[in-house]
Image (cartoon, rainbow, N blue to C red; front, side, top):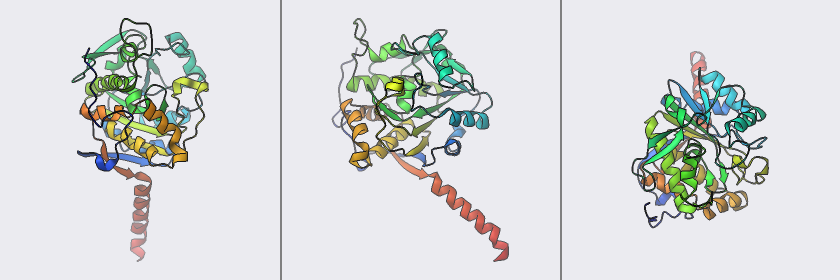
Length: 332
C-alpha cells in the first residue's frame, strides 16, 4: 500500500478560495427552481452526454428518510426524458435496511421507488474496473451490471456526510457504485482488521475518489451530473430518520458535465452563505477533511475547480423577452 502524502495546500480541512485556483474553466448550470420543472430544465443542459441504455444513479435512502430527492420529481424526469432508463443502486456496507438485496427491495417499496426499474447492481456479483493513476488502488470492485449500461446520469442529493464531510456527485458514484461487500470495504476498511470504519480524513477521500474515477473513465464522457441542493442536513441519506435536522437553507439545482466543477461549485455556494446559515455544514466538511475530495479530483485530472456559473433562470427569462419582442415586431 502506498504511503499517504499530502501536498501542501490540499489538506481536506482547508478551503481554497476561487481566486487562488488555477487552470481552465468548465460550465456549471444553475437554477433556483426546486421542483420537477426545475429538474427537467436543468437536465436539458447536460442531456447531450447521455444515450443508449442510461443508468440513473440515485441514493434511494433508508426507510422513510426525510431528505432524499422527491420521488415525483424523478418520476416526471424519467417519464418525460427517457424511454428505458434504469435506476441503479448497490447494497450497503453497514448493517441496516439495505445491506441485503431482500431488505433493499423492501426499502425501495417503502420509499416509493416503484415507478421505474431499480437494478441493485451487486445482486448477482461484482465486476472490477481499472483505476488509472491512483495511489491506493489499481482496480475497484463494482456492482456486476454496471457495465451493461451505455451512459450514466448521477442524480445526487447534495448534503453532508458523517465520513466524507459532504456528499456530492463524487460520493454518489464512488461509494454508490462500489458493491456492498468488496468495493465498499476496500474504500472504508484496512484489510486484516475488524474496524469497519477505520479509514478516515484524506485517505478516505482519496479512496472514494479513485472509485469514482474508475466509473468516470469507464463511461468516457458519456456521463452527466446533477446536484440537488435541498434539505441539506449534515447527515447522509444513509442515516434515514436519524439524520440531523436541516439547518442550511435550500439553494437550487446545479448540473455539469464536469464532476469536479459541479461539486466545487456546490461547496463554494455553501461557503458563500452567512455564518449562521452554513456553520453546521462547513464544520462537517472541515472536521472530516472532506475538501480533499476536490483537490484529489483535480490531481487525478477528473475536471476543473474553476467554472462559469450559468444562471438558466436569467437566461430563460432573456429568451422569453426576446420572443416577446419578436412577436411585437410586426406592429412596431
